[in-house]
Length: 232
Image: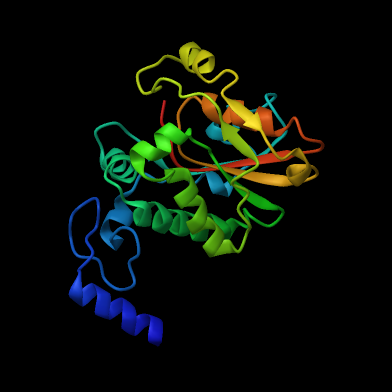
């Protein structure tokens, strides 16, 4: 009751709005409003996390177990505006709330049952200074809170400030992320099933490079969870 009272009080003092439609959120709506949630182009990948368009991007590239994204990311759409706000409008709380929402949705399919820890996609120090936070880390916080998994955020780091991949073709993305990650704690991740978390997966080049670096430790398995997946 205390939490509900405080939530109601904060909403009265500083009303929260849906980042998509701008309408006021109710106390039970943490990230987006119910109407926008119903309208989201959901992938339903969690229904079959072992074989879906996102999982197939990584077959044969590393020991991939499961992969899921919550919604299809479409340029110039509501989902693109949501991601843009998370990245560039300093909204770490929105990232965390979306992580919690997504975790609760995919957990219905027992997605997290055999996963040991969450690994947010790392960014360079320069990128983190520019944005003030790592959006993947904030998403991971929401996931961790929802399903009680530890976060391993110091096991791998990004060592190069690569060029933005937004307008790159597939082969350019692969070259752009070559050797940009460094495994820093192999003993921590060995024999673990890790959930690699990102905001958007497009070609999978960045996720693939990070996962392959993590797999330099002994007996590592990887699953992937993102908010969005770019529909081909």
